[in-house]
Length: 261
Image 1 (cartoon, rainbow, N blue to C red):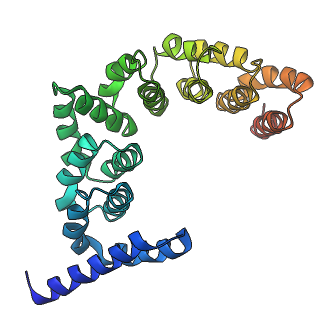
Image 2 (image 1 turned 90 degrees about the vertical axis):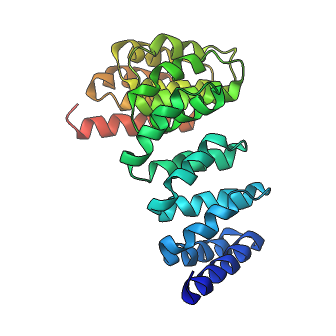
Image 3 (image 1 turned 90 degrees about the horizontal axis):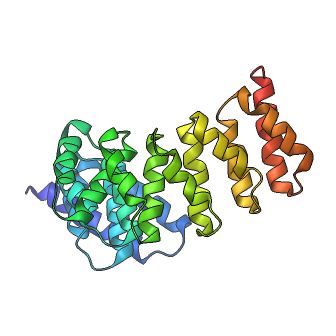
């Protein structure tokens, strides 16, 4: 290591330490920018911080590695994403992996799909879904049957990212009122991304749901389908009483009318 590189790394360490100690995004944002401006030379320091026991420290390190995307750190970032237990840092790591050269990451992720460690294969599937890779589909469908609601939510997010055709019935069951609101909301959005005739029928029914959060998302999702949704949205506009849902319905109607509906 040259003397210049040594000084640069000490500078990154100092900046990163200040970042972790800082309170408030108005202070943290310029510190993040300063580290990002160092570029790939910051990577070894940031990779080392990925093993820190503090959750926030790991989140900040993986976030910056995603921003900088240093090629030499691709495998380290991927391994972190496949092994991290803390949810916020793990999801930021999922995003970070998508920032790297897919020629490097996708073969490694596909290999991880075959892992006997279910957590590892599941995380690989989630990242692949964020990249639009259909390999993830069977894993996501299995995830809908997982007993942990967090895994169910992740599966719905992955299906939404892929717009996974054939998942409509499995996703549609999450509209049932027995499920937690956050699962019902994600299912509604996922159906909009699938955009098939079956998902459209499920969304039309969701537009009459008792929960305004479901109705709001159903209106937005139907709007994605284009002018064919206009009659349904116009009918619901006459009956809707929740102001936020009504605004969303009206917004979708206006947009479709501008497009010639």
